[in-house]
Every structure is written in C-alpha cells, then in structure tokens.
Length: 317
Image (cartoon, rainbow, N blue to C red; front, side, top):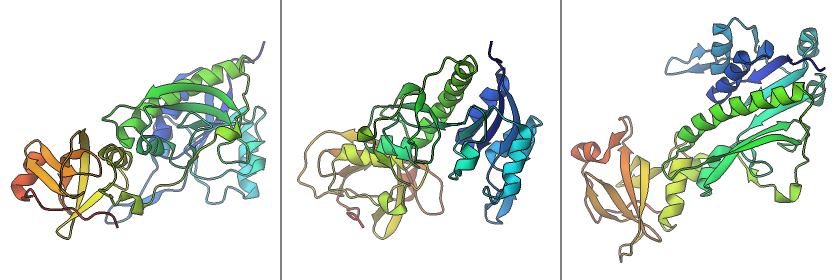
C-alpha cells in the first residue's frame, strides 16, 4: 500500500496561497520546507514586510527560504536535502526551471485560479470577472515548461455573483484551492489520480492587468463597464475623470433604460448613487473615492463633493 503521508515542499507568496498552505498543514501530509519570494518594502517608509506565506509558515514553526536566484545550484541542493515526494505551488510568482519541476519523485503541481484551459496566465480570476463569466473554478494541475499547460488533476467550479469583485472572489477561491489541493494529495498518495491532458484548442489567455485598462470608455455597455470595475477592484481600480479630478469608482449596478444623454453624462446623483449614461443602459455607482480620501458611500461622498446632473465624465483615455 502506498504511504498515505506525503513529504512536501510548498512554494507560494501572497494571501491567495495562505489557505492552501494552512489546509496542507491541517491534513495528514507534511510540509518540510516553505519557499517564498523575498520580502519587499511597503508603505511610505518602504519598511521590509514578510510575505503572507512567510508569516503563516513561521507562525507554525516551518522553515522558510526566500531565494533571490532559484536557478542557483545551492538552491537545488537545498531542495534535494528535503527529499520531497512533491512540490506544491500556489501563486509563487516565478517561472520554475525544469530541473526544479522534475526534482520530486511525484513531480510538481500547481493551484490555478481558473477552469483550465480557460484563462492561462497571470490574472485568471480578474479576467473571468472582466469578461462577464458567471462560473469559474480551481484547477489542480501538473506543472510543465509551458504557461499553465500541464495536465489537469482535479477541478471544481465556483459561481461568480453580480456583486463579486476580484478581491471577494480571490478570497473564496483561495479557500476552495486549499480544500481541493488536499483532496488531490490524498488521491495522489493512494495512487487514484489520473491526469487529463488539456485541449490547447480551447485555451484562452489571462494576461497581467494594466493601469491603462482602468480608464473607462463610457461608450461601452453598462454591463461591460460593471464587469470592468469589479474585475479591477482592488487593483488597479477604475478611475473616472470628472472636471479634471480622478475619482475611483466602486460597487456598480446596471440600470436598464435609454437616454438622449451622451455617454459619460451624470443623469442623477443622490444618496442612492451616481447614475451615468453608457453606450447602452446606465451604470449606478454606489461608492466613490477622491484622491487622498477614503472610499465612501455615494451619500457620504456627495456631502463633501457635489456632482450635478449634466456633468460629464471623460470618455476613454
């Protein structure tokens, strides 16, 4: 009978990876080493802060290594010393060389935030919202030299609601990723997991987000702009330019209807929100934020910054 307890090396960096690490720690399997990206400066003073994965691992007494060069021979030697059955990767943030992928006896697997082969790339969760998808999911996959092209081990779907932002969906998918990963580990240890090769003809890209995408073109349908605002929250955040001021826009809702007003025109501004004419229908913005200020409900925002009906947001870049 196969050993039901796997010896793992875990590689991850941001908040998204923490639930996966914690789920493994609570399972029958053993994490002997955690690899995370080097600490980075944050805040005005650029004070070095540990990565979320590093903090979680250290709190549980697990050794953490943060290599600057993952191709260095001494890094590979360190991994060999731990003799892992498997390397588990969750949002580590670097492309791993083939010698690292092949090092464990069972290979290297990844927790990916989409239903592969849909959304291969750096921003699968955000792209699903931006593109108006109502279903996404987590894929546990074997890692190979390609960009998210390895064989699929397990998948599970999750609904995208009309109120989801990439931030809220990240949190739910991170929890799902942890649960699904442990299920995959148990099946792998028992020898009951059969890889399925991806159909490259069905692949779609999920390229990194850019700040340029955060400039709204009000000639687009309100439904598309709602997806954009939610998909780019919490970064880089959609900003509408009104009278030369960049105002961050949150919590959109599509209001069906027609108007003779030009796209970008404010047709109503009250405690319920700021309603803006779009290429089709209207977009009701229920939360806003001025530069250097806090995110506020429309009611609170309008008390400090009046927006009159008829004013027009700049349309596009």
